[in-house]
Length: 448
Image 1 (cartoon, helix red, strand yellow):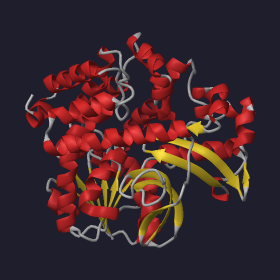
Image 2 (tube, rainbow, N blue to C red):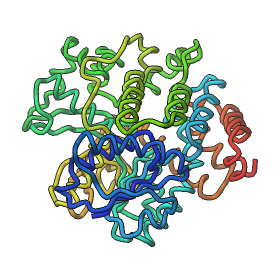
Image 3 (tube, one colour):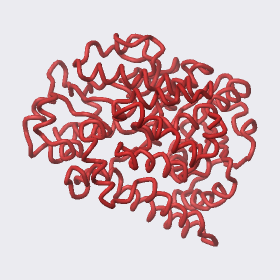
Image 4 (cartoon, helix red, strand yellow):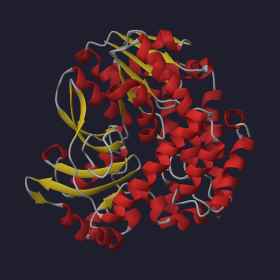
């Protein structure tokens, strides 16, 4: 089996490689390729991978390449986690809306739309290369905004493109732990879009355990989302939202927290990772230790803007969920390659999962995964406010895709203006023009 990793110099690649080292023998993995447009980043990350090999006393046939065609040629699976515009672009994505008093976040609101406008054309080219050089490959998409990007590339790859995110499974694990149960014993009724989903039920047979969790503030306090949203709001919903819903339910609070002087997430990561990638001359063991130290700081500050707005000091005791997105990716690979028929929450074409969306809309719901890929389960009707928000954001996503493909400023502004976090068309125009003035690739694409 061959696995290609696109974005092979990325900071989270060691997490993926560690998972591959642990499962490579079981999967019959005989080639791993790393591809990145920045060879220097790949060169900096490779000693970390060597450190992992030495620590685990195992290794894989690993090589780096600067050719996308070479990287994916004959691959069985292609992991894609690229960042068009680098972290410098994310800083702009987040800062421009904040200057207008609008939430600035990588995937939610204007930041996610601008990220998509840059990313979709590049991802469509990646998909075309995969279709030509590895027609039997499965594209496992980590690239944000994950649901939107997956929908765009399914136009080329169909159901062989699957989006993954570790946020839903982490929420489910935390809920199960709070209830004193193992996740594998339970069925999680989860529905929505990527970074826009709700946990509606936790079932043991036909008994829904979620009301027990929602009724007990001491249990909710052990769940990150319980501390973030508060028991009163969760009980009023009768569900636990994905943590990214905080940016919708508490938008002005988040803007106020960041504008009060809190460093944006992108600014923090850029400062942190610049120092890491500029370091040199380390042994593999030193490189691995340095990477782990940076990762620990990164995870400790995850979602800090929302936690600060909510007045939540630090993570709950179980914030360090195991698995991460690399665990989700490997679960998909194992389910498909070994036909294990696992239930995983993934981003894939709706079919009939959410009956109010068409069959091609990419949704995030529990799927049965085996050798035929991911088959979404039928979620059925959902509460009206959730349905309205899902329908609105799906239209925003599709407008953003059309804008990215055509280079239409009109459609780009429309996508921004239709987003519920953007208060007016005038604000949408100012945001787009500010993005274009600070991001040359966007200006070139949209003629601004």
